[in-house]
Amino acid sequence: MAKEKKLVESITSMEEDFAQWYTDVVKKAELTDYTSVKGCMVIKPAGYAIWENIQHELDRRFKETGVENVYLPMLIPESLLQKEKDHVEGFAPEVAWVTHGGLEPLQERMCVRPTSETLFCDFYANDIHSYRDLPKVYNQWCSVMRWEKTTRPFLRSREFLWQEGHTAHATAEEAEARTIQMLNVYADFCEEVLAIPVIKGRKTDKEKFAGAEATYTIESLMHDGKALQSGTSHNFGDGFAKAFDIQYTDKDNTLKYVHQTSWGMTTRMIGAIIMVHGDNSGLVLPPHIAPVQAMVIPIQQKKEGVLDKAAEVKEALVKSGIRARMDDSDKSPGWKFSESEMRGIPVRIELGPKDIEAGQAVIVRRDTREKIAVSLEELNSKVAEVLETMQKDMLERARAHRESHTYTAKTLEEFKDIAENKPGFIKAMWCGDQACEDALKEEAGVTSRCIPFKQEEITCECIYCKKPAKAMVYWGKAY
Image 1 (cartoon, one colour):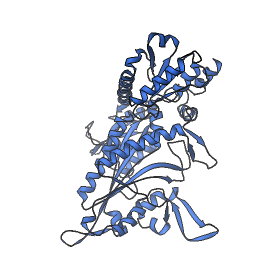
Image 2 (spheres, one colour; image 1 turned 90 degrees about the horizontal axis):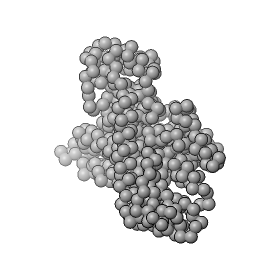
Image 3 (cartoon, helix red, strand yellow; image 1 turned 30 degrees about the vertical axis):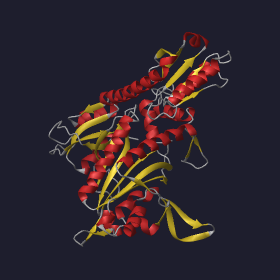
Image 4 (cartoon, one colour; image 1 turned 135 degrees about the vertical axis):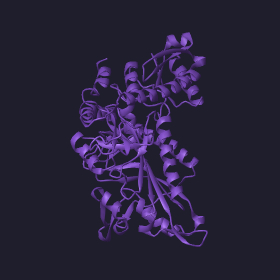
């Protein structure tokens, strides 16, 4: 028992130290491990399985909108990176450079891709000639490298996995429509699969992607009241096309520049799942994304027939479409319960000699720890029902948390007081001037998260300078 107690106690309470709690969960749930490369992580099987499910779900949704997958090189020649001024300036501090090939110095430095806009532009300049070649709606699954100073597993690492979509269109209207379409794909995915509610909106010019005409974002709120940018979609207009000379011959036989978009989501979403749903016993995985949805735990498994029945139950669950496993290790049932909780498995199914005799099993929900005794005949359908109920409940709980931690400020004093004492989103009016945005960051320690599509008029004046307001903005402290 002492051993089992220690397994759960080894997680720092989130109320005591949220950052340490997060690190403990990542480590104890065996999602990642440290490496000899500072700032880079090993994603272990339990963590990678979550990413595979994210990939599978997103990829399916992308393809339903006409997206095709490609793969481009990981190295970018320096001259190519220099072509778009704003873009290179935005990424310069984070670039890692390759200077030698074997023992020979390279004639030109190559950067390890921090993102692939320039590579796609170079490719499109050679691949697009006519209006018949458009649109190009491509995506690649890959890793990128950004030399971050401070790192944390999943949330900010020097190398991370992601997808990056890069599209080219004949008109500005088509590019804008694709930009918004992909943002909506991300928002639906977060809510339906990850049970994470999001705010959809546009980034301010200060916060937009380097080289973009407009950046749209989905913002989610973590358990500690900090915001997390959870997916972005950028409209590049024809800026990159002009820098890279990507032109096509239109139907009227004139040369025109293409309009481009880019959109991405990363392994950071695993960090979001942890920080939105986790508790002091560890990970809590939404059933739709959980690699293992149900863990069958035999009780007194050395007694005759127990293991055989547990295996039969597990197989029946798998055949009914549930991702189920059985823990037949020689650890005690209490240890297995703690381990199942730590790893965030949505339901565990307890089955012992008395249960078998009564023709039942006990389902235990990970999120509420509710226990439900169910007949073995009804077990498959009941587990499926519990998983769906749990998925909906987790989204509603996360939404209720966000709503109770979203505040409205009408005066600067009120704004500063909320920023200092009430972690969460702050809704306040803004004049559109970057000087006010900078001042709020300086004086209240918050950044603009997004200008939401759903606008409200809280007052008619800017929270900072009192000039006429142009938009209501979500503000907050962020990861």
